[in-house]
Amino acid sequence: MPPRIPFFQCLKAPSVTTTAYCSRSFTLTTPAQASTQTQRRRHHDPYAIAQAKARKAANLSRQEVLKKERAAALGDPIRGNTTPYVQSFDTAISPEPTTDAIHTRTRIPQSPDTDVPGPQTEKDEHLNFYLSRSELDQGVSHSQWLSTPSPSDLRDLEATSNYTDDRTPDQRLSDQKLSAETASEALRRISSLSLGSSKDRLRVNRQRCIASFGRHNTDTTLPPKPTSTIQPTSQTLPKTPRVGQDTGSSEVQIAILTAKIRALAEFLETRGKGDKVNKRNLRLLVHRRQKLLRYLERKERGGARFRNCVETLGLTEGCWKGEISL
Image (cartoon, rainbow, N blue to C red; front, side):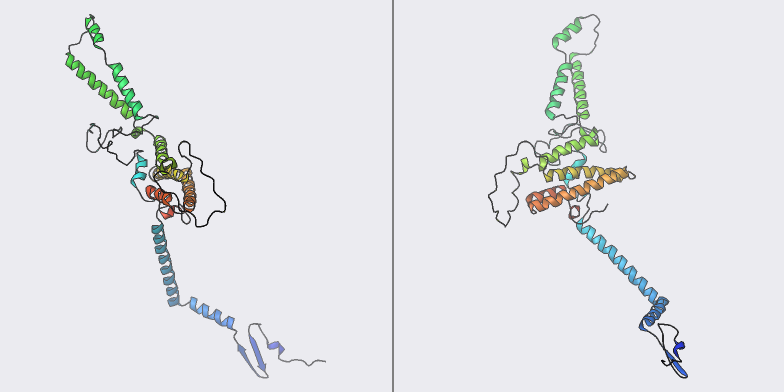
């Protein structure tokens, strides 16, 4: 029969080791219990609490500073930098002045603060209602021809008994010229894009983007992309000659998306602050442009075509690098 242990009932808890000898016992504290007691004392120490709060506040402020520095380095992912070409999207008039377009019309505004609508230059080819400058001039000349009576018609009118006109021939001619100028000015104002809608300006901006970034025009001015260091194993076939205007290349689509993004961002900042549908549309347009920019950079290897697109449209690295959150 095994011997009985008389002091076995003295053990109280598994975390505390109690050793008893006849009339003497002592308690040993485990490391886990010691660390817990230290933490409890630290949580109740006001000096330690103040230090922890100060460290947290310093870390949060530093994170905000770093976040602002990264955002400033990448730039605005929506608008980018404002260039003359991007600023011309608001009026749909080309910003590049030519020698023929410097001479403005003799129309003088009534006050220096306001200006009358209408084409401001003689070579402003972008008009509303799908009109061209030649068609407008032809229509104005035809209306003047219709409104100008011939000398024989004037003699017939004077011969009639019910014709009474006290004006002299010179006065009659000056009044006729004044009415013709008024009619031609009215036609020019009606056909101007300054009186058109945003949809009309977007249509003209789309045509301008195709003419400025289309490869049917830029192939003769921009150098080709850098060649790869790896030699192709098989001989490449010659390229098929382009027919018509280039409307599907990446740079053309990026320019058109930039025009849409600028118009939509301007609307959301001024009149559509509560428009959630257009906020989602803006987010979709920005991310679609980001994908095209990444593809163009990878495809052109950062060549002249990619740099020309980015510099002309004022796009920053935030437009295609990192994650865009609006």
